[in-house]
Image (cartoon, rainbow, N blue to C red; front, top):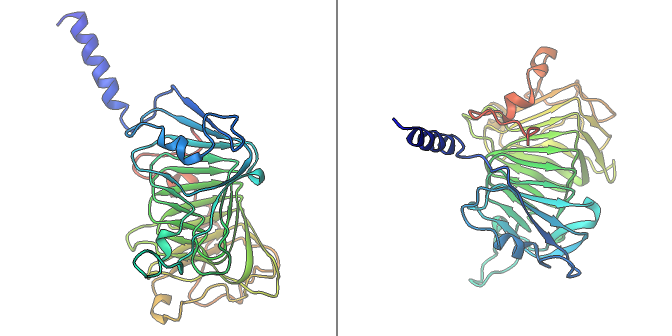
Length: 323
């Protein structure tokens, strides 16, 4: 075998082994509402990315309110939204489930997201994802359908159904999440790390639909839960589907959290299958003796075993802290 043939084989192997990983060469696109960037629209910047992209693309979004529906389709991986400050970099729209569509019927929950992330390997820093429909029914700020998604220092603002995660693994670090009813819901594996959860009315914080054969659902680690009005008591969650899985570990809770903690969605049979856990809850909303009998308290050893790598690692060993 000649040296040239050997080199060609080696290059081919390296290329094959690199499938599913982004190239180290990144491309940057600047979006500015005032016209000082390459685009004034976030969606226009996304549309400029080649389908089947394998290179990291940074979409730097300058401060402004971008009222548009945003979608990162499944063929556009390795996209990163980068804002300067979440409070001043806002992606928003205002659809809600009761709006009547062209067919004369309400459009329903899943046609309302202001932002939809279908692609794997998406990330965002310093961005607000919002739906401003208010108390009109289901109105998603964001729908996350891809795998290996990371949000850092982001804000999620809505009323009912703020964040929907259908499947995949998602990591939230130092984020702020606001809503009223079922405002974190779905069947994804989501790890909330030192996030601030703000309840703006008496209702339900989570509505998980974790599949039966999926070990992990929603994990809140070292988070803080506060309420707009502590008299408007909120449940930690209710099971959208039978095997809903939610954990709160070392989370501070204000008086706005109901002492019983969890609701069965008026389906007593789900008390036998729902997987609701707490450990180390603190604050006036932490009431272990008052929680419903069908919720569980983790032991110290069990809580210590709920690590980032175990929850999000999966078969590919994903670590959201390695970029």
